[in-house]
Length: 289
Image 1 (cartoon, helix red, strand yellow):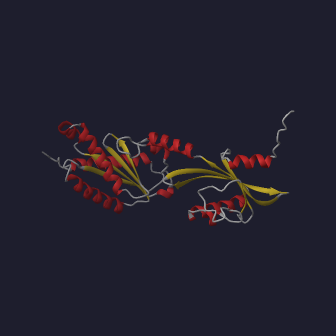
Image 2 (cartoon, helix red, strand yellow):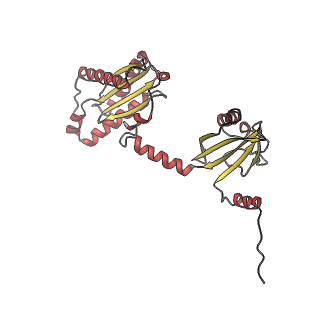
């Protein structure tokens, strides 16, 4: 006797697949008030409450990160207002692990009338982790951990909103002498110690680039002359502390500020470099035993 095979409806098939985590995405739908009316799964990264449900709630209510909840809520409103799709990537931390989600939203219409938003949440943790590793290899200097010159090609400072923009060129004085007298390992440590000093004084909106060899470039948007002068004093103070164990440390610094978008960035960097060499020549050679 031939065995009768059970036939599954599309709904049963999807329910089974989601129950056993065999679908790599979460589907959701929201009404015109940005409230969830359907979800195929409640992600562990959100707060579904005691009933473990997000139906009838907005992202303002369920997101553990309130700023993120507000962002998603505003995205829903904008998607419905503009009639265009929206895509974003979000970073979460769960049990000490960094997770990434890709979220895509589209407006939904019925007979020409807007009725809500539908979307997909995809787990892109593996993809984003690989991307960040690739970027680290491409844009980060292995010795110091700061950016390398490739990063300048990626990061766009050529915007009027970033002006005035300060460029500080920094150089490790006497590096050759340190290498010859104390060895290249000490010379490498000198470069790393310099990077640590520069990172420690860098404003949050600035970046530090290993420009080449023993030269570093600091780029700080919306920064003025007086602030640069204070920053240089701070660099000198940090050097004094480092010199207690490494008396050879002496960083030459020169800066230039770009005020006009018509001024070439390369010209500003060249000016900062010339000013650094003037400072380098003014500083006396440091002797150590």
